[in-house]
Image (tube, rainbow, N blue to C red):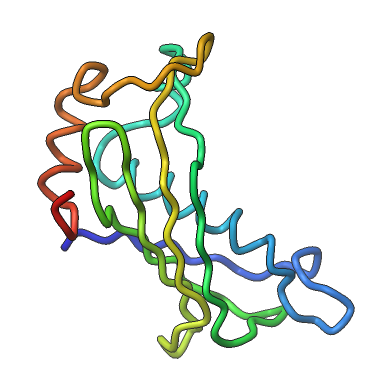
Length: 141
C-alpha cells in the first residue's frame, strides 16, 4: 500500500490553554497530508482547481487516541483507502515521534465542477490520476 508521510512541528497557536493541540487542527494536518500524497504521486490539486474542479469533503471521521502537545513533531501518514467512480476515501494516521498513534481518520471526497457543483468522475478529468488511485487504493469499492 502506498502511503505518504509528512512531518509537522506543532506550533503554539495550534494548542489550547493546556498546551494540547486543539481538535480542529487535526483537520488542517489531514489536508496537508492529502496534498502531500497527491504531490508524491506526481499530481497537483492546485491545477485541478485552476481547471475548474473542486474536491469537497462529504464525510469525515476522526478518532482521537492520545493528546499531542506544543513542541512535538508529529507525522501525518496518508493513503487512498478506496477510490470509486465518484468518491475517494483517504485514510490517515497521526503519529507521535515515537511512532505511537495519536489519531486515526478517514475523509470522503467527491470531485465536482466549480461553477455548478455537479459531480464528475476523475477518470474523465485526468485518466492517469484516476488509474493511479485505483492502483494504490487499500480496498476495492
